[in-house]
Amino acid sequence: MTFLKKNFNKIIWSVYFYFISFGKIYAAQVPPCPSGTPSGTICNPISQSTLSGLIKTFLTGILRIGIPLIALAIIYCGFLFVAARGNSEKLSKAKDALLYTLIGSAILLGSWAIAQIITETVIGLSA
Image (cartoon, rainbow, N blue to C red):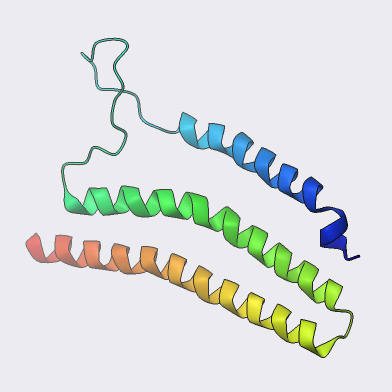
């Protein structure tokens, strides 16, 4: 049996507690409701007046979820390399998994960079 098969439940529970604990931190960063809002009402944390603000909020949320997932995927790829033990077929699968993880992380981080560049360009042109 491999390490992952033996410790699958432990890994799943640790990932679960990781997201539960950091989810509380992310929820604490939501801005409060505007003043004058009646108590007991639920405010929309995504309410934005501009399209660029909405895109920025959307991408920030995706990055907050995606970056920990990228870290977990890289750790998983490391486990695949260790579990391969020199088997060329398993090594090629581990290399492919790492390649796809790095491509996905580049797309994720590149989307943020492209959005920032477009926003700054539009603001610079309109000023």
